[in-house]
Image (tube, rainbow, N blue to C red):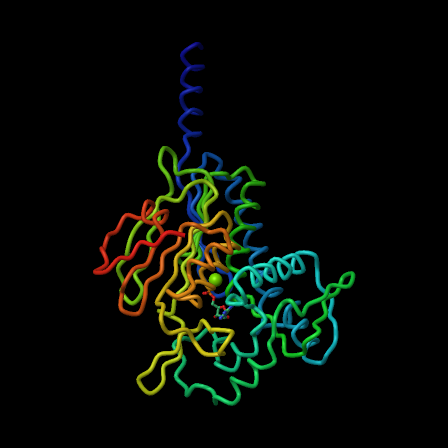
Length: 341
Ligand code: AMP
Ligand code: MG
């Protein structure tokens, strides 16, 4: 009898050893890999079912161009000079995005949806093979100065004082989605987990005795540039022009636009940021690509992010000392410039 007791204890002990579980889900056309380190497989499965439903809702509600969700209805109403209903979650997102727009001096600007559509970057099929838009059309949209600062929120609604505002959350929604995914997983007791949306990710806790280890893609090359050990709560996001672009007459146009000119960014291949939330990291990475080597430190300071890296068109790596401490190069760059914030 006594032996049986010990045997039972041993077996349950073994069954409750944490191990890695993985699941893949889609959101915003991106494959999201969820890796959890847990001993509660059932809780993980329940969380995954709920997350799948939530990702589907986000996709329809926050997509600027597909389906007939909230954001599409909002943009249609703005174009008619009308207000539209908005739920509390999307309102909070728009308010946070407006703050980030301000903090980046307008380099991150999700109100430029009309420019995104003019360039054709609202598609899921890249690369785009078409001529770029007419310069006059680009300039006409820039001159209307769309900004999230034009938004007002009467109870339950959102209005725009500027009919040229079309909200495109393509540079931000993934970050918010990753944050929400971690919060949902935590409610199910899954607190050691990584949510990785195609290289943009956030982690919670650890992978057993070690940190979550992730790879940073090398823009233009298939191989990773470096690895980072992500600590509890950290988000790591990279923006770049190496997959989504328009190609015409031997020239490449990146899908990230400089809101001041309406033209795609040219100097920067990619920007990587480590930040305390996915939302901040996502907005920061997009803004830093626009900021370029001339303004990146100023934008990083404005956003309060310290771990930042840029890769320029010629492959030079610019990074802060804080970022350098976190990187382990797999593929050391030919030129590296460390700059203090
Ligand atoms: P990301 O990959 O996070 O840098 O987001 C790029 C996407 O954000 C583009 O495909 C556009 O939908 C949108 N976008 C482009 N330029 C900007 C910008 N300057 N500010 C905010 N969103 C932008
Ligand atoms: Mg972004």
